[in-house]
Amino acid sequence: MIEPLSTSDAPMIGRYRVRGVLGAGGMGRVVLATGPDGRFVAIKQIHSHLLDDREFRARFEREVAISARVSGAFTAAVVDFDTTGDTPWLASVFIAGVGLDKAVRELGPLPVPALRTLASGMASALHSIHSTGLVHRDLKPANVILAADGPRVIDFGIAQAVGTGAALTEVGAVVGSPAYMSPEQANSEPITSASDVFSLGSLLCMAATGTAPFAASSAPYTLFNIVHSEPRLEQVPAPLRDLIAGCLRKDPRARPTPAQILDYLGVLPVQAQPWPAPVHAEIAAQTQKLVALTSDPEATQIIPAHTPIASPPVGAPAEKCRTGLRPGIAAASAVVIAGALTAIVLRGNESGTSPQENPQAIPTATLPGLDQLRGTDACTWVPQALGETLPTEVAAKASPDVSSWRWQATSSWGCDGNSGGARIAVEIGAALEGFASAQQVVNGYAIARRGDDCAFAIEGGEQAARWGVIVDTFARTECRLADHVLARLTASLGELRPDTAAQKSLSSVDPCALVDNSAFAALGPAVAKSAHSCEWPGYSTVRITLSQPRQRATSANDKMVDIGDGVLVEELDAGLVGLHECRRVYRFRKVGETFREEVEVFVADPNQRDDQLCAIADPLVKQAVGRLPAR
Image (cartoon, rainbow, N blue to C red):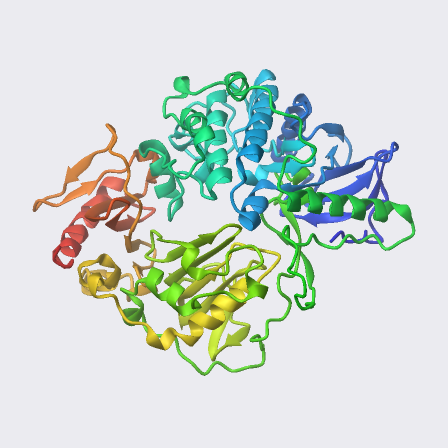
């Protein structure tokens, strides 16, 4: 929604009449306004308490200068700015559209014609950006808007002129969004326009398959994959596979230029609606709301949050709607001017009050302990718990036939199911970071929620080390599928049994039992952060994590270090390890053709060098290896 102005807010910014506040972040706010010609603009302002910060003000002026240099049909144009006044501001064209991340999350991968339109538009945008001597450096789905006539690239908050070497943060820091970085970004090497082309390849792969090609369970592993692994492009449609593979070459000199990408794609046919019909329906709805906002100047200045991209099924029951404004990933029309601010999302309630939700209820059931949860085959349990079919009211965007869903294991021994526009991810015994305290009860179990997303957790553990079973449906506007999954899983928790094959797997291993706790008396007792992660927290930190990442292609840069007793560990690139930490990764075994199991020992201390910390980590690795199951 758009919040009305407060009595202390000026009704005008420059020549622009302010219609309301789109949202605010830690560094400023974004307002919706109309210009003298009636056009809508999004205006970014710095918070008053930062106006005396010369460094931040200079950063804002730099962003304005860079944004003003970029123009073209596929970028959000700057229309006005003032960097010298008491309250600096930047106005850009307000674009009615749907974020690419939201479109793929709620509808599934784009069809081939839409992918070609996306690729051509993005290449044109990069050609425009690079022709000014700039590199975007943060090309990702959240920074792409699907407008009615094509894609738009937004957010030049960390863009940089080629060859300037301007520092945006501390020396050695990696700037950007991990899953969409280039290898040179991950290694903190000099950036050229070819870096944006690599990011474009990752973005197109995500739009084509629903998953970024190098995404892993943590940022360090994601960066490792970007530098060393080859992308898995089997699910990419054949017409675009070679193009995306070319963009994702490790050598920047081997990647195509935006002009070459346009030549490869050729002239596309003119399309009145380049995107799936539900995307255009939401764009039309946004436009109607904007027109209604200005039709009566005295009317309450509120725009309802956007509805789900996919319309609810005919006959679906009406639901109580709660609208809200929250910081998050840029989406829909609010994202045009996000820039260096915390981005804003316009959204509404997903499912209203679930039939099982009862904030006053008292939990009566206890989640099975981690020992019982370990070794459970999530991809066996989840489909069985859901039954053969999903109810019509929760399967609006996917096949109701559960057996037709594509179920696959994840790096944390969870399970990810995909069917068209719907997705379910379940992780057993996961750490509940980011989840609020339980506010509802389902079948006697306490249920926590992460923000306003349709991500819930069946809660277990203690407050100091919260863990549980996470259910995420990757939606923000409709939680009926999540409600159904929670109800079915909580009803079958008593039937959980460890898989017999898990006895030879790390999935059944207690990481806290792999080393002698007496060695960490000064740090305090071990804390089970999740079913597969144990930590001894303190001024120094020791953590053991068991995971099941995808196998990575062998690279010439891969190094294995013998730490003694015949134990070989993977040596990570220096760019993936901090100055005061040591990470040792032991490869336990391969699992089929896709995954492998690993043990990671992490030791950190701000007062010790990495070589000193590795002298601590190595004996722990050898002790842990000696206690692993027989292969």
